[in-house]
Image 1 (tube, rainbow, N blue to C red):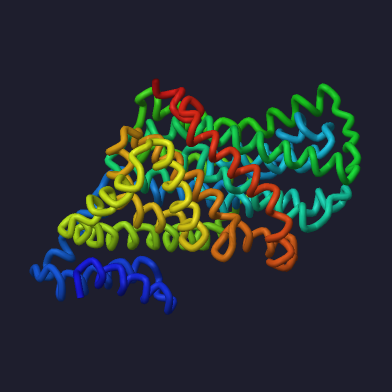
Image 2: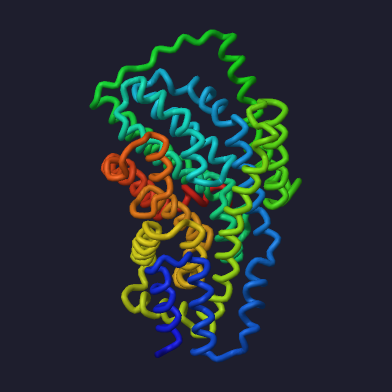
Length: 424
């Protein structure tokens, strides 16, 4: 058996029997090293250590902790109240509020499921009370969560940047346009639904005093993205340091300003954050060993030769890339899919002149869509729990949003200025 067959065969077999992807990657690489390329096993520990011995990777646990602190600290409520000022009077306004609030919360959490949970817990009861069908309500908050990893800061963007050797800050900039585009496309779906089902407009009388009071209360939540992104692009701190600043800021705001975060909540928040970060770090460590075998066997070059023998057209390659990554997103979590596919597909894309930053953004948008596609759509399961709805029902209701997001994906893929405007 060839080393390549052993590597991928054992990996997919382990995945099929339910072994976690981090363990599957590492064990498959070890089998290939022992029985294939036959080098000393010490290379496993060396490559695993090198895979996580990265200063930018330290941003991941910090951003996870910051997002969890903000979610537990009442930030999401203030964001919903703020966005409600702008969208509540439109037809389909509450659905638009869910999407708009998710876009702002995305600039805090960096995670799709966290965004769905934080905003969905507030908006699902409110939307149902105002005449929205339960399935559409759940679909809206699930779909809105997809921007969680597209609008910076983004945990998967950090993962990709480390693997691809690109600047985290630059990739963050590339996510702004696609994230806004995704939000607009989803709002159009919400508006069409509201028109077809005659959802009444929510009549809200807002006085100047209420307006000012809402803005003041929301200010602490709205400042956080400004601190994170402003600090990075002004050169005050690195993305990793920005994550640490965000975590401290979230702790202070939650405990002493909004006071929704209690001291007794901190152990659970910290433990949940540590577990989430550990899962990603294990994947990053084992994928480094996996990538070592890929490099030794020249697998990326072989795949590039196969794809380029089919076509060397840049746009056709981009289309095939989208299909591969979109399918992978249906079965793998974002960080796992990015860690597995980046070493394989990135050389192919750059060989036909595609910017690694555009590749990264297409990756991230695809993975966002993967969050609402079965069978492993994390945002779907979160929305099911919040809305108390069956998974099969939600899958049917989410289809219009998936179509809208795929349309946005095609625009991001073939209209480069949408993502590359801020870095040119």
